[in-house]
Image (cartoon, rainbow, N blue to C red; front, side, top):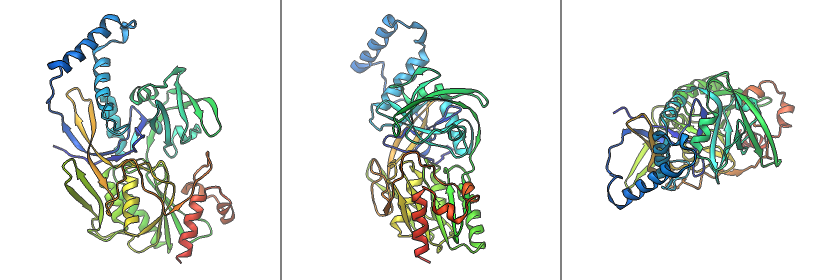
Length: 413
């Protein structure tokens, strides 16, 4: 069986759904497994109760047009998974969402380009993907989706909301957005597009000898791209790295290990994995790291999840880097994808992951060494933008998290 290790999103709350062709970018996926039947719902008292409810709906519900076998079956499976209480992490995927999940980890997909979560029945933007239609349309972390194309989606399962937002590149979708920071509601029309994730970008910070390295997500090939960037940075004579993992929802577990391995000696512990029986296994750094001695500060925030938390927690425990920003999301479980016979799947938490020092991240997150909050609506600086700034303009920018990271690194020179 072809096993893939994925990590993603966040949560406790974060349903980490990627609004792509139908997508979600999910929490830590350890692999794919064909689910084997072990519970016969059609037999026994519980099975009779389900049959009774099913028949009552079919006989009495007013909108008979929606009562397809697929709608009811998928709804039932989704309800079973939601009953586990692993809000937004363990989840059910339709066949289209499975395809989008796999497209996401390849680094290329179609959609509006935003990560979302469910909070108290409302789908909330976790973060727009860098250079995506969602970002261009002005969608911000914390924005709440109230309606899609004029239809109320409050208290609707995340999977249904995502399904309404999805569509081919070039088509439009109108979202009714409530922004808590300003208590305003507006309609935002977004043109869907093909999105190619440029997951590693960097630039020299103006007026410094420091590099700002932005990792947007942990899709396939990220660690190789990071190695190339770190080699360029050191060849240019730069003396420190700001590793920016803010609003990074995760991706592949293998890439999280690969990224961490660039900063830690070989065989250093990157994370601990604990199964349902309490047994512990270790993931360790591999190979010769490309940046074992250069000073590093890591930027994190509430949108940093899964793979981002693995990297941040490992570097913090090893005292290899200081963390600046806000407490991360708190994913903390390994997901396994169990494929169902029609191409749909369940993502189920099968392991707990801990930092090298044994800290539990699930529902707690990774706390920064230096807590720096930003006012709502603050636009985070990117390497592309910094290339256009003077040193004075950089210092006047409201991205105080980045400025504090610069100060910490300069004080180590």
